[in-house]
Length: 468
Ligand code: GDP
Image (cartoon, rainbow, N blue to C red; front, side, top):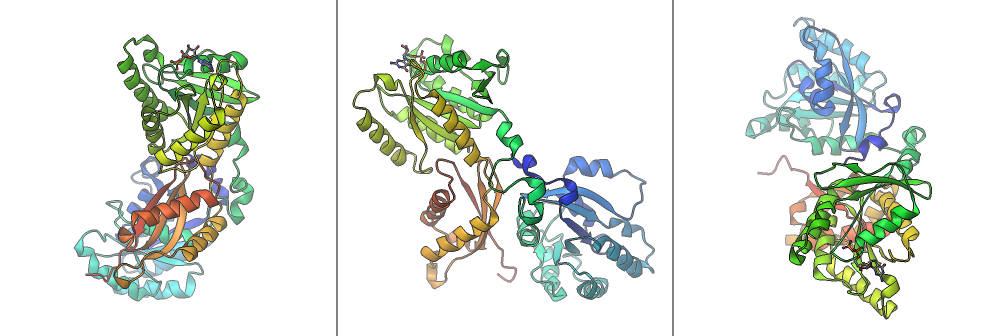
């Protein structure tokens, strides 16, 4: 499930990134990497001679138009430099960023240096040097030389091996508007809010729980009270169905993986099947509702199921079902709430609701909460808010300094939604203690309104090219 296509701005408003450099440094391979196989193949017709190719590219959450000037490769050697400049000048018109590709294996050539000087004068846009073919040791000397071009740190890259995408992202991200920012706001919808299409998309919902938690009763009640769009659709998997219905004007697809379970007889098998149902459900659901039997409370098996759901990055709601039959309700509720916080240490604030499939009480709230949870799970945190939070979190609790040298956290960006996934850039991140990573994730969740949502935080250490 990839939420990114919905958030892409239309092509006309995307920033333009142009690839420059002399022949054979790997411009086309880089172009193909950024575009992806499918599109590149369409363009790669043999015998088609063109000065430039353009395509829509995606690098994590950055969407941009990429322009390749590989047509240069066919230039006559003696006129190469002149043609390079002519070509590049044309391609730079309307560009937002230039990628200046050099060959790290070959090292800098005189041509690269000349062209670099020309670019510094004429480019008019930020230039990022990409030291391509940098895989392995053979690329090291060229990488160091690339610093001499004077465009800041070169990005070590291997277009052929697909290495260095994160480094390239780090170099490009500050130079391009993030989706939904500024110039893109008109096209991409307001940041931090679901687009109308997103809100209208059916909620993919699964209801799981141990045998006798009351799943069948609750599902029958939900479907009985609501308008079914069509009959169940068989076959997401062999044992599952998808039931499309409408709840108070909003479409919901109920994913029911319990077909097999209903036929089973033996209890311990039922228990195992409940876990399996839940595992299959998360493959298709955006939000998973875990039903607990309020007459029994929270049991170890429930935590196991909840853990799997969150581990798969899905949004989770916990519901104390059979609330009509619960005794000592407030103590029960508080006890389960505390046990969830304790037992699901990786995700704080998983919503806990009460309902009765038998009487229908609490079911509207349940569906409302499921939509709200999906919204948080799909949310793109505005860049400004993310940066503000980051600065504050580091100021309140600076990262540790093992061996007397403070670990440097430089930059954070949201790479994906569904679930919210962030990349943290810095130095020596492999030395960052787990407790500090937890601090960051919990603080991010609490302050940016992502309660109950699994958050992924990937750490990216900047390789120091001068390190031994
Ligand atoms: P499933 O195995 O999870 O599908 O559970 P069922 O829906 O078959 O329900 C198991 C038992 O719990 C049945 O005896 C139901 O009548 C009972 N039950 C289900 N929902 C409720 C409820 O909301 N309140 C009460 N008091 N009993 C319920």
